Length: 382
Image (cartoon, rainbow, N blue to C red; front, side):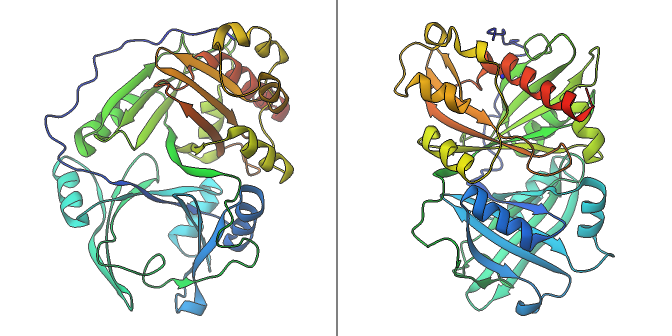
């Protein structure tokens, strides 16, 4: 993400007078994938996640297999179809592996669902209690951009590992007390939408879920000679949940957002940002496990000390690992972006470490965009 771009002020962010839909946080991210067993192995060995639960034929579920992985407060659910005639199989056929469900934890799934639908959300699954030996779980689902959904989850009456229909699993690869690679929580989830649709989804999150606009970056801020994008960051009332929404902007060549939309087959989640308390150690561990990261131009680090000022981390380690740094009036942040984690140029990850900053690394946008375009050029898609 060399220059420090300006942030477009846009309209002044307005928060609703009362939080009509209080959210506790992101409960889980569910990926629909072609082979959940292999995907689970990848996330365990490369990202340090631990297997905690499983659902499939062995737990009397016939149409799908799901693996639940955890690290810190992050929970991933990897699901694949067990036959060709299902929504899961169709989703993977169109999109490849991708995020289907950004599930949100609430006190009352029925109340959250009713509040969202009353404000214009499209219902997918009515409020439902799922019974099990360890209690019951309440869920309800609404539609978001593309084929992405939000499931409201109420766990107050369930004491099991994940959900009814899932069996607990002890991971033979990752010990229960293993910290993995040091990932702590989901920081934000970024969605890509088609040209002209960003403001519609900004309005959706404001009107339906009570989010407010945290930041707005225009095509002057996020651009190179060849391409550009626009982005608005929405957050819930507590500030725990952040959903940046990107759309392409006019440019000389195909932008990274257009490439994503083409290969994903429409709007969807582009990347997930995960927090680390020690990004240097996390990135070193991930590199040793085989994860590739975007290559940042060496010139980025020439004036970094002047731009970033004094920080706790050694600058030579940041350059060696390709970690970006940015400072605003409140502090600084460190961040790095993986290359795509599958063959389609769609989903990737951001690792981020916060030190008081409130922005999203605006000073890094140019370097990030150049790195992404270099990857596009290697694929012949720029």
